[in-house]
Length: 355
Image 1 (cartoon, rainbow, N blue to C red):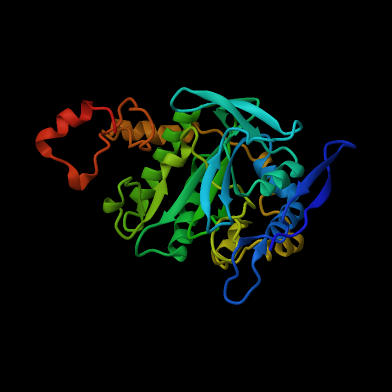
Image 2 (image 1 turned 180 degrees about the horizontal axis):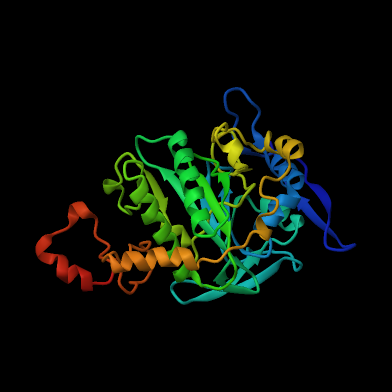
């Protein structure tokens, strides 16, 4: 049954107050699981208000894609890049250019009232770009998604994450970890704003290949799932323009309403992927503080990581496959699933545009 709307007054910048109308606050966003109550829209809003400061530190001043659901997380899923109809006048936007070359405004979540309004508009997960709004061509976050393939679990991902942290330190970058909210780990590093997306992609590929050399039985950079085996995939394509990862502290559309939670490297060994939920994360944050405090003060240079890429070029290793919706990119291998490769057609396939 629909519940009455409530009007929230939320502090904004300076002495400004924002008014956000929350319709149907008791409407379930996550269904009941194992006898627990469903997680409602009001629960989601209360969570965002409880984690406001570290959430905004992670998502603020960046173009953001909203992952939205009609009828809760079991309903229809869609993504909003353009500002939705009815976006408040106080919600900042920034013009973004996409791989296709088209441009349009995208939302920037600079204050917690903006996130609350997005939750009212059925947003569950916030996906910020790894750039700042004033120049969204220069990347300031290196993000590496460690994704366990068939036969590997969270413990394997944690092992790889620690090795990745060591490797990043060797190339002059400080690593920070968070749970993905699902089965993986996201490793971040703050960057000086000196390079654009393709350079950062190449730095990530250089890092990923070196990690694969060090841990060949556990790590893979294979884009095609049929080639990954029982290993942890280093998803280098998350470094591309218009590719995003769920923000730190962002809820995920999975059972029990998990969130993507920053943790210290010492904590990472003792946590499980679903330890952090909308209901449990605020208390842990209040008890232990933000595990990513200090991230902005640890910006590094990607020059040494780019040297890993350049060394691989000297070894004869070149570009890797781009996402399927990208235009054909210079030096890219054919986007042909290996099991469907026809040797006689392979040279011709190298010259064709992708589907």
